[in-house]
Image (tube, rainbow, N blue to C red; front, side):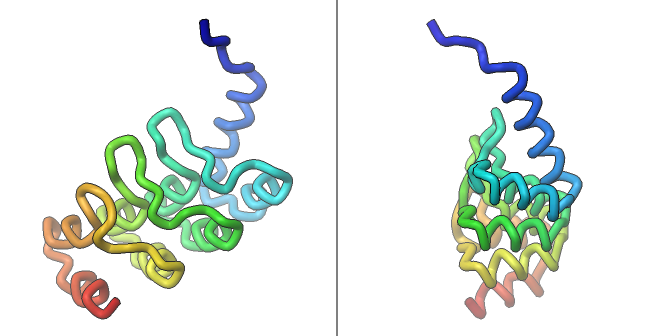
Length: 130
């Protein structure tokens, strides 16, 4: 039998995921610096980086990656933060992820596949230069 998660832990995790979604970088990194895992994931496998990337928060993405978060960590659907940023058209996030080593071919669909789907030839050129 599996014990139910502590409601206080769930509440704290929810707060941290919301900080990533809203791009509240300073508070988010205070939690990570205090011991919250930089690769914390929610019940769908979305990491803090994924949530920050998808919502366009380049500073939060950069800060998490500087603290050891994985740029290419896939969620439960096989998606990477880079592919999510391409889908949302978040160019500042795309550049941060690429500069920190994100692989445009990782995940399903990959960032390259996503750029092709949406006709983002400028991104395909950027990825090709890597």
